[in-house]
Length: 327
Figure 1 (cartoon, rainbow, N blue to C red):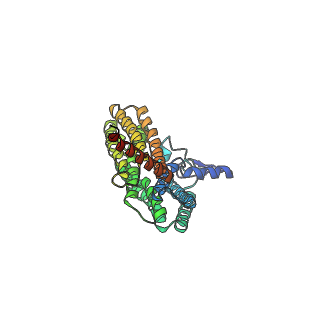
Figure 2 (figure 1 turned 120 degrees about the vertical axis):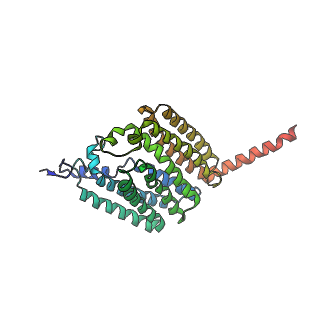
Figure 3 (figure 1 turned 90 degrees about the vertical axis):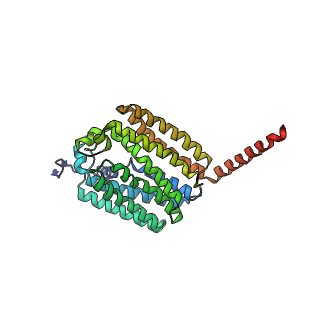
């Protein structure tokens, strides 16, 4: 038998493996790893490279559950537009494989597990921040902004930056200027990353009246905004080095190389706003950029890295000091 649901598609009864896969797909699993990478980088920086393995595992698990809950709730709320867009109509709810009420129960269970895990094994601040990410993503971005303003992804980007705060809070039980700077870097990175995607699939958003920037103001204005945010984001990455002093030489070199490449790609897109291949290239690179930048934070924070760079600095200083004596 088949049961007709609100989206107008038939709900197919599935075997256990298919049911598990459908609920897994509700969580949009491809999005979650990038959130976890920023969480891990924040934890390594906060612990100065001496992160507790159990705490890391628990925090990443709690973050995964919170992100999965948020994405599941998003699937419930956006099921009408998901059904209308070719890119998303095969998701579990619009495809009829999961009913909204079942998805809601699933999201509540995920969020409850996340809060319990983080509050018991990390601390209450980390747990509350994870829950605030869910609330912000749903109440502010999905409900208030996404369908009503071109600035949806700018303000809504705060939800994607919260995992950096969760990681820091899990280690220290507090939030420092460095934690907020990591938050700011992810926040500034989000518009170029997401608008590059929006340039690629603007027709889908236009079809369902979602006011993404390219749909409302066009490609030229969007690429200009991408350029501006890129020029703000790249210098912001160096604030962790000076004046905050929580990142070092290894991170600085990597941030410089990655940032220069990001600027080049944003400039190329600015010169050719209608080239979807350039937008796709920037979108893909933005993911690689954030992953490698976070990897740079991890490597830079390790005690062995700090020891080697300190010794190298002392040796170079000794060599420079000895030069006048050789004359």
